[in-house]
Length: 313
Image 1: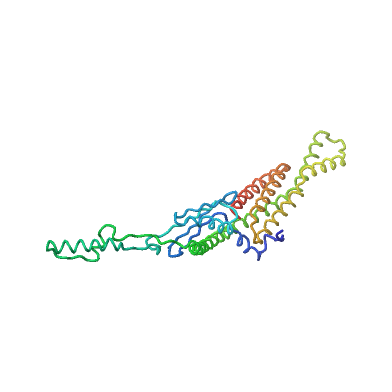
Image 2: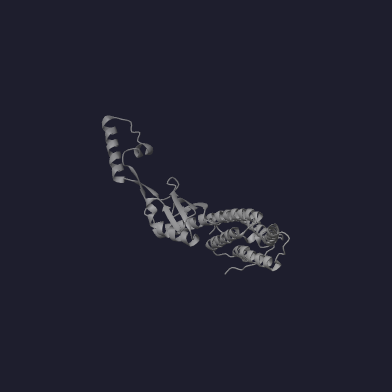
C-alpha cells in the first residue's frame, strides 16, 4: 500500500511536486517518423478515456503483419483507454520500389524503329527518354519486404511515438496536480469549519430548549438534569466526529497515493466515493444552516475532483 503522510495545508509540502508527476492521463497524443526496411513511415497515437484497454491499429495493406505486435507494444505502455494507432507510409520517399526495364520488348522496339528509319529514309532520333515513354518498356514493382527487419524498424518508430505520448500525458498530469491539490486543501478547510461549528449546534439546541421550557412552565422549577439528558441525546444524534475523522483519513490517503509509481486511478476513485459518502452523512445529520451550506460546498469540490480523477491512470 502507498505511504500515507500527514500534511498541514498551511505549510509548504516538499512532496507536492511528486503529485501526478508520476501519474499519466488516459487522454494523450504522440507521433514519430522514421524508416523501416527502406519504408518512410509515420506513426501517430491518440487516446481517450475508456473503462478498459481498446487498441485499434490502422496501417497500409503491405504492413498488416505488424498489427498484432503493435497492439502488444501499446498494451505494455498503456493499461486503459481507447487508443487509435495510425501508421502511414510516404510512397514517394520510400525505397521499396524497383524500376525494371523490359529488355526483350525494348530490343524489339529498337529493331522496329531502326528498320522503319532505314526503309523510309527517316531521321533516326531515338533517345533514352523517347524510348522509355513507349508502352510497357518500364515497370515499377515493390521489392519483397523482409518482414522481420521491417517489424523491428516499426517497433523503434512506435517506441519514439509512445515516449512522446507518455511525455504529453505526464505534462497534463502535472497541470492536474495543482488543481486537485488546491481542491484537497479546500476540502480540508471546509472540514475544519464543520468541526468548529458542530459543538455550537448542541449549545444552541440547549439554549432553545431552556427557552421553550421557560415559556411553557413560567416560574416553575425546571429539571436541569432533564435538559442535560435531552441535550446529550441530541448531541449523539447529530455528532459528526467520526465522519470528519474519516474525511481527513481519506484526504491523507489520497495525498499518499500520489507518491506511488503504479497506476492508482481506481484507488483514487474509490476514495472520492468515500469522501462523498461521508459528506452526505454529515449533511443528513446537521441541524445547523451554516454547516448545511458548508456541506454543499464540500460536495461540489469532491465532484470536481472526481471528474479529474476519471482521467488518471
